[in-house]
Length: 307
Image (tube, rainbow, N blue to C red):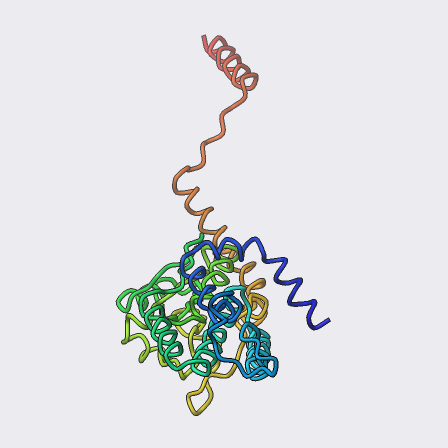
């Protein structure tokens, strides 16, 4: 059962995975992840490799390489238990596959290990994961606009994500946060983002560390009346982030978005009524034709009596 669940999850997301594999970043990462497998199994290449197998077959894994690959599989399964998106699953597989390849290539030949490690460093410096470019109802703040927007209307509740563009966790969370903004955005409940890697002053004021070791990225903070009322992940007294899963279900439950959305819609409706009243003032009621004719007849009769 433990093996069937990941298989069914992979098949369910297969169309989306296929779409990602067409992107250069994931395509190159896939080839780099299976580099050692390709070298060890390619006829004409593997014939010249060293091996510790008893049968002397250089085109098959020896017992030490099998141990390294099994250890890699165990680490990936443990890391993917906390993954909330398919991007995170793929990212964990690609990352640890590259680490295993470095070890395997160095064990095989130090020159091949140095070459592969150099390629990994060049790829890391020149290629970045594709950013989420889908639909969203999110306002992006700078260090100069965030304070004014939060204090602009005390009736509006803001949920702001503090992120960094270089953080893999923030990149994979982008699609989840965008979906939440599409479902819950209204006049009384709005979503915002601010890049603390770009605006360093924001980190000090809102106490969000941009260090990769702090594990505070991404951070979701709820503001009501310009004041913070909740944040996830929480930070303990030592300044360390408490582990928390940024799944859509957790965010909806912890921030009580369903109830908050219902209350915020009332503010939206009141605003629309006021706008409509200001644009279209009430028209005075006109008398019906029969009633108007009767009134004219009564006026004629009274005028005759006077005469």
